[in-house]
Length: 376
Ligand SMILES: [Zn+2]
Ligand SMILES: [Zn+2]
Image (cartoon, rainbow, N blue to C red; front, side, top):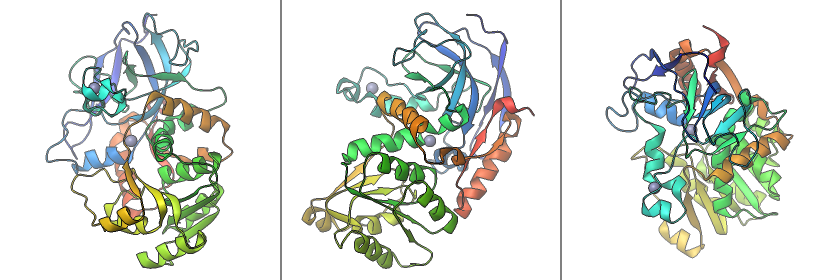
């Protein structure tokens, strides 16, 4: 297949906080196993904000294309890429979601079958924007899906802008519950009802959780949490003290605590209270805190005495992305409401500022997105 346009546009973050640079780059011809896609929607994820604010490490990163929570439409398939990772035909024009990182394939982690967790996977998310294949991030008109990146045709009837959230946010939650071994009938408490939290609530319900409790301080988010399936909500603005909130969660679970507690506030400060919400034998799912040196103090004897575990979860295997898409397709939760304001690629800086302001106010529900095809 020949790609029609000869150039693609990418929005490069030259360094954290600097204005984005729009560059024209050559449109690649997909090689064996590769798929060239037109980006339909790329959301601004919390980690994009951390990188843009320069919170990850001094001066890191430079010369990169942000945006990984995305979905696209196939422009051209390379030889051997005419089927998706589940064996379904994949042709130009098809909407598609794809893993945004690639395992290295030659390290002990990969050898253990845990390639998605390998250091190479993380490194592949932020590749240099000024080297071929150039199309290495979501804030761009096009993206080149590499040979080792799983890709799945988006189920019919599921809008690509909604499917964009499958990558990163939802697939992360799918993998989290898999690692936590959530069983039907168990109780789940979710700290933080932003995008990840709402997905966690809806997914916990569909996995058969017997009781789902949402914890947040914003009333609108708690309303939405109920609509996503939360049986009970705990308002952190009404119960201002952590102690009151843990007491509330314990009361709602018959005094025993929740079997699984999910941290998606994104601040380590909430970990101690989350651990106190756990039942004996409970699993604490730590997915939110990604900024280095964000520390929390915990009472280790409580973990030992309660036979509890803390599970850090980052990135996910192919299966999680496939399941995330199927979930979005079948759920009755109002997942389309997680699509927030959208901006054309030319206004990526404004989009970042808007997402940043919403995140700082803690009121964001819909993800701010870049929709390259929406015009300048
Ligand atoms: Zn590896
Ligand atoms: Zn993300």
